[in-house]
Length: 116
Image (tube, rainbow, N blue to C red; front, side):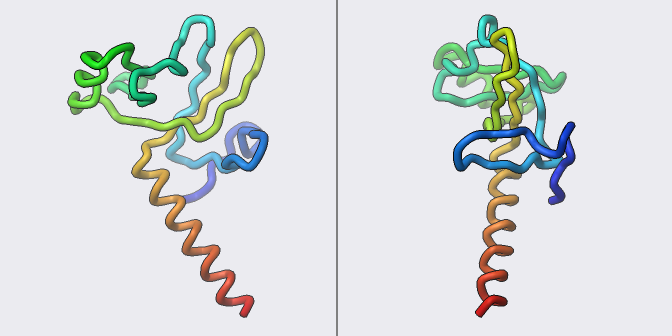
């Protein structure tokens, strides 16, 4: 569970969002004009076996994607607006993200114990 050094180390984000880019991350460039992932049914995204980002427009498409063994569910952890209505999006499997977050929480808790 190492941190990836993507371009300059991390995708910059604003606010208190995540600042890590994990080695399991999937980086995609999307266009707001042509991709409507922000309107995906049930707010769930998938990656197919060829690496294409898929999102369901309705319940039937969502059901087909979510039951297809060749589709992997992903979540957005970082997003960066670039130019010309394009976004650099960092995606990751939610199970892998959960493992990273639990590992990081364990490290923080260990650090707190060591400070006492």
